[in-house]
Length: 128
Length: 443
Ligand SMILES: [Zn+2]
Image (cartoon, rainbow over all chains, first blue to last red; front, side):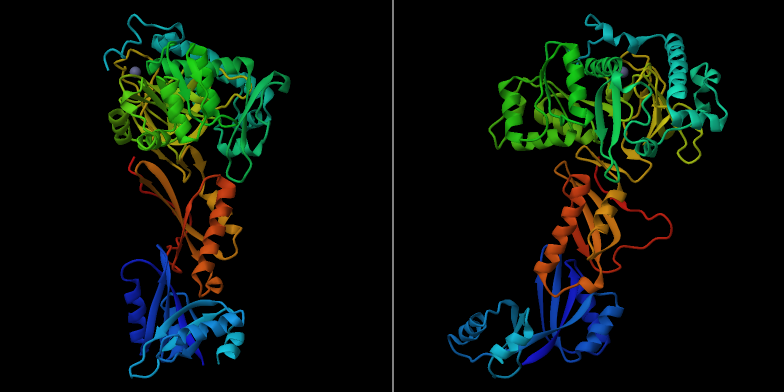
């Protein structure tokens, strides 16, 4: 399933992530999952939230670079080799995973992986 | 210290004679030379002639050094605007050497020397080396870069004129530098201070004990450095450490040097006349007051320079020096009055960084330059903001932009800078002239 993800450019310094969260809180945005990819000096905060467009607008007006990007949410069965079969399908279609992380799920349902691809349309076709 | 402090008593070299002239005698020489220089410049260089005409000054009005303040200033931009040979006062057939320094917009500044100018330059460097206690029996390793840069060949010429055994090592290749230093038995080394600190730090790795080398004197220049670095070098290499001052627009290294009193730099003022001016008004300031150093060449023929604005901030020390020299001293230079900074021996203008950024479409040209010194090596960091439309949700892409900016700047200034991509509007916008350079080097 194609979902919207929020991506925010962030300097790797104390307090900056707080400011992002503060901005989201003020905009009444609930965070479902949040993850950070970082280098020594900067990083990208990626989040799945309930109101993506509002969140992006709020962050932009607070002075951040914020972007809404399409990613795939792929349900993976809770058994050995399940993720492998998903990845194998992607790889067979010549698709490279740019990054991925697990979506936090409150219940005992199957895990859901958030996966980013360069060609999201092809990925959606291959992984559904 | 004491056994080295003997360049006056019993160990006098005739070339040092001009360092010790009675002031009135020196003044007479300066006045004569100034008149001749002004005449040469007026008669042969369009720029000087039109500037003097505009001020209504004729060569005949310049009779003594006190008349110097009637003369127009020369700016670095004048050398660039007349690139390459516009300020030469003699026929090209008389020029025996060209050197060049890096300019702001790619065009270098070209300087030329006649045969006599070369001798003058060599003698000037020699006088500085003599001040440092260098003698003809010394083995002098010149680890400044050779080439268009005046550092390498300048020190080389002076040391050779003095009769030393010169080792033209040039810059770079740490392991080889240390090997040569040890195996050739260098007793004097000339390079940038940060490079020598680097050599000290690397020496252990190559199994060289700097304290056990015959090395006894270090002559350092081409970038600002501190008493703290001096102490570090003394302690870790067991050498006496001296500053040498110069700028290629005037002659290269050898405009002035530090004597064994280690209290300021003697300007060889029979050849290079120093003035201190208020950088804002251009008014001359009395000895002792801090301002911008302005230098007039008194004996150069190929390229006489009138009142060159160095943008270096210092003051003249008029009090007699314990070494007995009568040529006046300036305080060691640690600041400049424009934004240009010197790092790793290279002059860098913020406008060069800006030009590098302008060639990369992903970034804005709002930037800051942070200068730091880590373990005595300079680090230049350029903070820059991305343009929003180029923010992609990908770290590799951000890294590619960073490298692109880095390569673009390196292509202009020739040295590597770190690039830090910062959040939008992180760099404060300012009205008028933005402060671009933040120098946190503890020097
Ligand atoms: Zn002295």
